[in-house]
Image 1 (tube, rainbow, N blue to C red):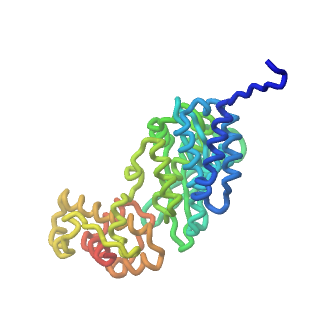
Image 2: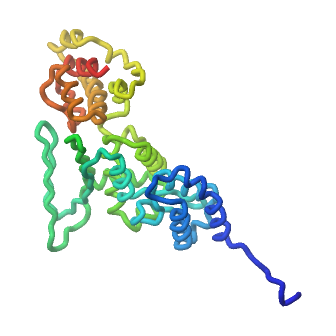
Image 3: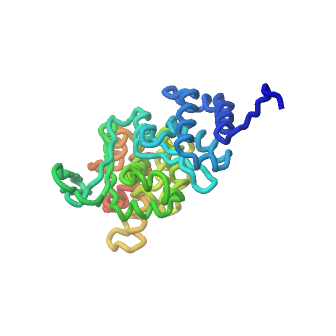
Length: 335
């Protein structure tokens, strides 16, 4: 063999690098302005080199995860970039963390501030819901704070509204158990941040959404194997009551929601289980809609319904205490 003959070998890292390079034009089509395809490719390759197990994942799953990061405008570099590339057997998975959800929420332009905190055993914590909601958290600044007990998230909207979500450690662990990445990646190395992400995700389902946020919640739910509708107090069905805002045709409501306020008033003398269930159903629809309206629109809707209190941030059970006639009238006013 001649001394001039060179034998070249292609490593798995080289193969993935070539795939990422060829995919850069496709990344550029979906990336938001703050992130370039060149940077995404560079930081992703660095991440893969730090986690060699990713090279054993299928190329399809790895490229899909990178494309998902591109669509969300997140760098899959770990906690700093807002997302993690985690190998799960032979499948690569994109895990969005707390910082990533905060970043996407702020990009909607409708959030004044959004944050999440962990409550430890030694911290002082008070939380009350109802007509006069209250949340007080005084961390123990000196000494051992103990183990994580609760997590909560707060969002202040630019229209003056606010949303709060609180979850116990048990609630968080129940979500973790359903995640296919529960035994690896950030759930193991950054449990507190993932707990904060979990409560923040529940909060974000009540906030004004962008396409990026909707995609992030969907991807995250698929990874954790959860039902998004079951994660919030207000179900997505409430969007039907607000379809007028987008000019879309209003989907038909269940027959029980089409009954007139007068029919409900006739039943109030003897409230049955069916009446209570109906009020809760009305409250769910109304409350889910309230999260999509600004303060002025919410006030106008409630005035049209004859209610004087704005139920933004209330729970379904609390709003269901309003007379069924008020709830039905509010829905009718929003049609």
